Length: 252
Length: 342
Image 1 (spheres, each protein chain N blue to C red):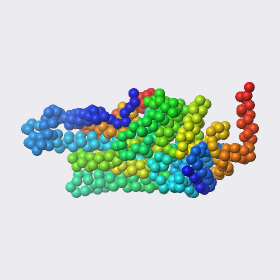
Image 2 (cartoon, one colour):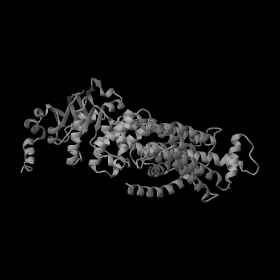
Image 3 (cartoon, rainbow over the protein chains, first blue to last red):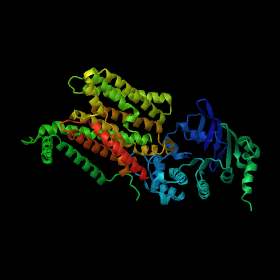
């Protein structure tokens, strides 16, 4: 489905992504992990065509950089890490923006399918009761769910999620990750998410890629990638011991 | 209750009624007050090609007040539309049409024309207007080229930065010209404060054409502006062609501002205050906010111009002074109300 070949991004003299290559097949939930500043979000921005890059990113063989933004948005939905809402838009208005690429012309009226997708997205993310609330009054977690609902309303084939668990409480982490898994199971779809919580990555991911200093150091099945050697080399600490230590506090 | 996406016909009818009432008031009231019936008779009879009855001050209504009222309403609508568009595009509630620096460029052109006596034979104020438009366009090209040279992605920060620096540069040049302007200093100062006292039907036609063309483009990008107001990344993610939409809007706003400044001088606060006021009524959705801003901008400038003409009659104030005085107070009140309403 989605293939990255030697994707390199430079910000002035700084090499943010260095020859990053990996692929995303139908049914994959690829977890992109690594320490801060490893280049994970930069790779997401390159896929979203938000930063200039060298190398090639293709979707079913078609070069993403040659696609029109609206055509790209119908295929790939991106949840960014940061959101800034400047005015008192309602949750419904924010979610409705997800239908932009499906509605043609400025005089177009939303069809019943569009309305249905918006209502479904609001319901899935538990925001129906807040649909008329101002975005400026929401908590961080509610705002995150609103933007996730926007991506669902966009109805893409691939979800690119930059730290989707950001601001979410445990209940909604479980709910949203379960929801994404259910979304993925409907066929013809794939997910790439940037994660810091390796337990969530191990629990929900089908494959993983590790990044360090702009390079993809390992990519493959979860067990194959999350080995003590790979993780220790990337994070510079004994990750397995740390994770086990955290868990021990919960054992009776 | 969920807000609808667009205004209904009766809401438009209400806005149009309010606008027409404000226009009628401004034509009737002045140093000589004219009854509404006489005003309507004069306008209707001249449109129908019939003679205007004796005793109706035809000259005041048709040659002085009506063209002025038309220019004021069109300028107000254009300035407010530009302000709303810039506030949405730049996600900055303090932005307006002048943020880009084009307005300062147009002023520099006009001041140059006034100081050096540039004129076009047969067209009153033609030299000032022509130079203002030329400088507005030149400023736009220069600002966008510099912003692009600084940042190839046309980032909003680069555009605002260049706009602000350019405005300061143009103001410095204007001060320099004014200090050598001698006896022309009064006409230059009056022009820079903004006034539509020399309006005629040709100016109204120019404003109308610019508003239909540029305003039409701006209104047609309402959906994209909603996406921009939530962040440029978000706009791109939902499928907006960010660079192309941004460039189209910036050029449209600049041309419209250039035309307005060249006709009425720099009239402050209309583009800042009225979009905020409209946002309180219509909400942030640009499909409603942009038309609401046009109506409220037109009405606000009409009433300000009326005050400018009548407050210290027979002395006429500059409309820019009135809009700034009212606008500064109104802005503080609106901003407070908006923060409370969150």
